[in-house]
Image 1 (cartoon, rainbow, N blue to C red):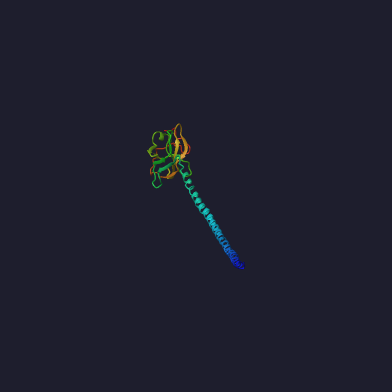
Image 2 (tube, helix red, strand yellow):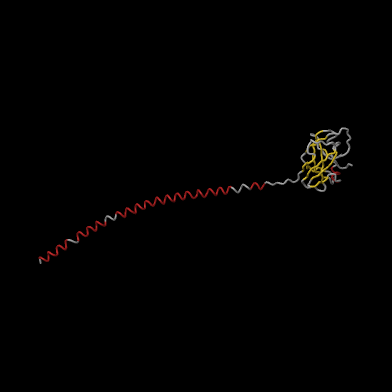
Length: 230
């Protein structure tokens, strides 16, 4: 019995105590290592994503709004150009005589252009006058238009040849005179229609030995009627 007890004692003392102690020691060191690794990784990712989103949102609205404003400002410019064309109804332009360099000695060729309508009962009257006086007709406006002495030359041009020597506006006096053409009504009665060309100038020189006659009489110019004469 003593030999049996001696064999069983050394077998019970060796295994249990040393086996449990190293197992607990090996488990505790790995625990702090995984705890430190995720903490450092999460701190690094968080600031990186915040910086990226802030820079992207600031740049996009600034670049998009500027080109839109410039494109909208261009179209209104051509609009005022289309309002420019107002046509003028009727315009009278004097053509001859055109200056005072070449004088007339009595018979004078008057020529003008009328860019407006001319009714059958309308015609033209040529008037000559000195500064400070009323325009006076140099011919019988009713008869000269009815009888074709006021000639249509085409292209809205007209001509009258009249001797101005004895007319009310000249009265055989040499000098520089104003002249113009007036639109008048010749039927049923003479009437000034209030339309005239901008006045021009001519120079009249009385011939040396005079005679005079002819031409013109009547003419309405400052209000007198040209009708009723020869």
